[in-house]
Length: 343
Ligand code: KG4
Ligand code: ZN
Image (tube, rainbow, N blue to C red; front, side, top):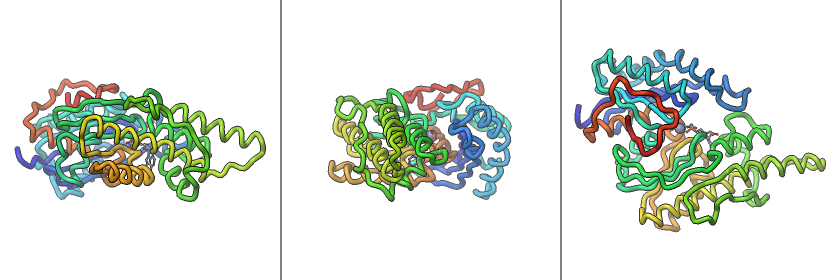
């Protein structure tokens, strides 16, 4: 199996039960069962509800993935699973299932880092990662800039958010604007009918010389602006607020991503995580990368949001790199640092 291992990946760090199957870097199946609708009325993911949903979805999702790939359990060479970071209870379901499958099938287990998996997945679409590359991960839980000499062995943190994650800011601002959860895609859509320059929202840490982010001040500024308009009886034009907020986020993200490439003399930028599905982020990143002579890689939106294929891809890289498998005693680590690619 050494060259093109057939790996089944399990992702349960948040509200998606993702099962992916890859052979090397070829995607064979990617099934997702989401509990997002059960969380919508709470305006955020309820950990206990997510964990229970994973437990119910796990076995059917694995069977569906095998069916999609036209494979049997006995074809699987290795099991990979997100061991962290994420919601503790949600991670436990995936890790326990992965151990059971690995033990039952007599195949190696790889407990992997969710964030590194968001980076690795791009190889399914755009081939092997340049070494090194800079990766910007923007999701509901994380906003990080990484230097990636080798996704299977060596990931270095360059900076991250000091408060809210980018996706979290999208979700909170959407709530202020009366848009559904999760807010990112709704803001993206609303913004298409608005102007990104209508309102000058603050851009936290824009010129501070670090590669860190801050989105909590922006989120508060949007909420205050909306409150003030409503208090004075003026209409709130949702598309303009959405577009101006979105512009502030993607302006800072792309500026810092290019700064990271310059600082480390790297010419390849990868953007991953749920917020990488944002159409304005993709467009502005392309524009600024072209101007800076940086090649941009962004996976298609379906591979940006949480899924099992990303975990399987990183698992496949670990097998191919000859990295020793995890033991069946590995824990789920809700705050696993990005420097730990695999446990
Ligand atoms: O990576 P992901 O699926 O899960 C986490 O690991 O958090 O990211 C989910 C986040 C949510 O905050 C969601 O609002 C955001 O990604 N998101 C978007 C878009 N699609 C998803 N944010 C902005 N624009 C989008 N089109
Ligand atoms: Zn994620």
